[in-house]
Length: 110
Image 1 (tube, one colour):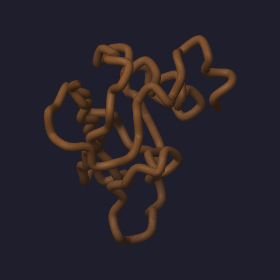
Image 2: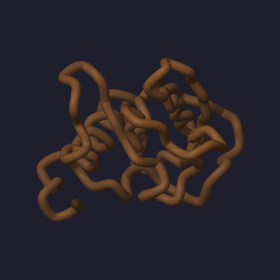
Image 3: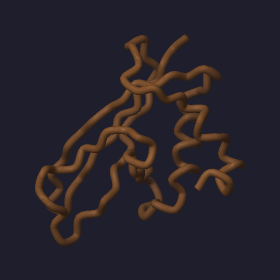
Image 4: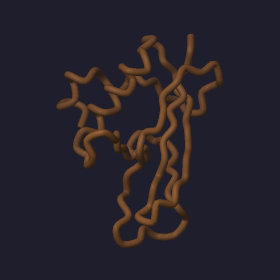
């Protein structure tokens, strides 16, 4: 079974960036597109730009990429999805992407 590597970035108001990625299981063999749609539905209330998937990984128990200093004026407490790809790397978290539920279940998740 292929795992999924999910990479995301934190960007502060000065456009400084920190990146992080996690490898999670994919027991239902979802496509990368379906995994993206599940994340998008799960974090629907956090979206503030039309072509960017914003997320709060800490709500899933995932690591964050925040800078050590406090959030400055204009900084958002959101990460941006960069990439989802198949991976044979071992999981870095005990999490299966299918836990997010299908997009039509979004109202029950949030």
